Image 1 (cartoon, each protein chain N blue to C red):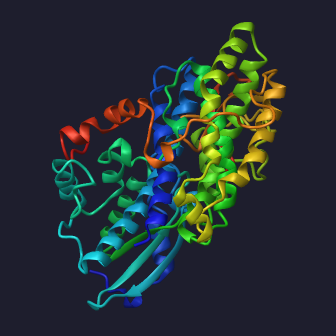
Image 2: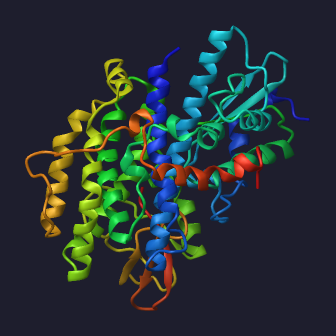
Image 3: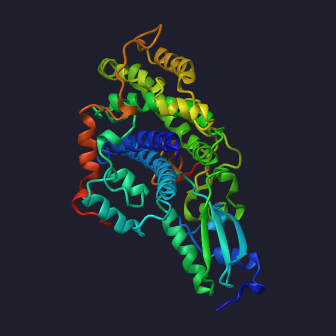
Length: 172
Length: 287
């Protein structure tokens, strides 16, 4: 059993690097940007605890319950029993919080990462984001098939050059 | 006991849940796979928003019960609570139960639902579902834009989070109105039919219930009458581009009301029957 007197939040962050998104298993919850804060607290029983503050990507994201459970399990495996997971909604999650390492992992996995600059997160009609790069052949000659893909956070695209369909992790 | 805030939060939650449930009826029946998935995603967003709101409403209800009885509710877990609530036929008579997001969704009867009538109307054809979503999302977008500045930090946070999702819904449904209205003779005719079916349910969106007025006075809620002009302007713009006539150019015309007060169309019974059947038949079941 770990005693939390000498633990650091950095150590907790590194443990969470191994907790992955169940929908996109190459991404850790840290890469995804859903971990907002890690705080240490001391409880009345004398056993110090860890508070992990998380935020959902989308309101209806069905992965959140699994993510909560996996965070708890990972910390338990490292001996941290007193874990409190708090969910916050504001500020709202954005793809800007995704790490550069995460974006690279997405691409290798075959999902186009969100463009660095948000382009069409408004109500403008028939707008398409420019220059979505095909994760397979790197062509920018691609088109949107559907704004909504296999999960809430993705849109469906197809490459006009290699003709492969692919998911695009859309700006949000 | 802050009934105003409870009723107002339930009203917002019920709107999102009922239209989300309606849209989910399209799952597996969409005209093409991509649009089937699109509408299912929108359902997921809306039901997710409803969950955040029901969780908050449940906290408010439980807090108010603790205050009124001077101690904590006698039934500790939500699973047992759900079973008990069901055997007592819902929240009305289950005063001792702990409210949860599930009891609020699955164990209230139609008279306790406070959604606008528009959200419970049948899907009809694709045109009618698209128009219902367009009317609703445009309204919800304007509503959440203001609600994110609410003095109530919980409602403000939920609105801020949801607004990003609703932005997609507005865009997607607006595009469909234009595509169908300015499409073929058949699609145009279906859009006009949809307008005839739905228009008289849009006025209710802007007629505040008492709890909306009170929530607005308390700084927590939004004055829905203030959304009306902007909503009409937006509808006019999209309809003009879609070559569709605006039914009442100089105003709303007649509108059905009552949903916000729990007086619904006959359709809600069918929605609730399908949605609540499992929990009512097998109380507390999980899978």
